[in-house]
Amino acid sequence: MQDGDFILIDYVGKIVESGEIFDLTKEDVAKEKGIYMPDFKYGPFPVIIGGNFVIKGLENGLREMKVGEKRNITLKSEEAFGERDAKFIKLIQTTEFKRQGITPYPGMPVNINRLQGRVLSLSGGRVRVDFNHPLAGKTIEYEVEIKNQLTDVKEKTAAILNFYLKSEEKDTTITIDKEIVEINIKVEAPKLAKKTVADTVKKWITEIKKVRFVDEY
Figure 1 (tube, rainbow, N blue to C red):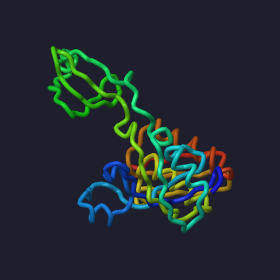
Figure 2: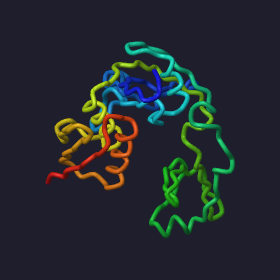
Figure 3: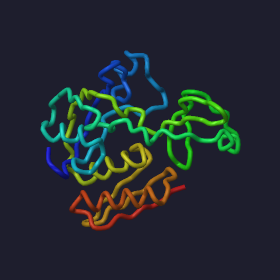
Figure 4: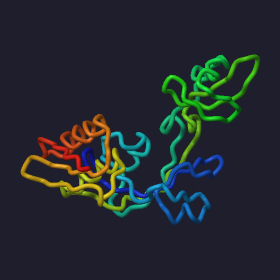
């Protein structure tokens, strides 16, 4: 695979030390392992090589693969979600949580100043919160398969919509007219998300110079 290639991948991501599955695209595996979520959208995941759609370590592994190939890719923490860093563990006054109507407890996920963290402990009116990524410091393994490579402009556009808006085929109509792609979308999408879709389409689909969104209510 090379920069700019559009592919669809299936994967199961595990923590090597514990064998715990932290992410996957395969519905049958989710059911088999007892972690199936009815509201989650399973199925092959779109990736643009070079587009930062997945972590760098996994992307580097995909570069060495071909369509139809399956491979186990093991990543040390520095290749995956980084090392744990003590500077991302903060002490926050309990009053800050009370102002937000929150009663903290160990293990509780929290959002402070738009940062995601997890409560480690409470002591003396202060709360110790870890803002490291939950998988920081972990060696992880991906069981990954490249299912398909997309070459059609409409399929590539649909893959970008799926990645950013999680839109389903029934909710969108994509029309290509020379260098213009028009997207009719029947679900609400934030303006910033639409701009990101448009910028990504124009960057990675060289045939397209302009993107139009049509909202339908």
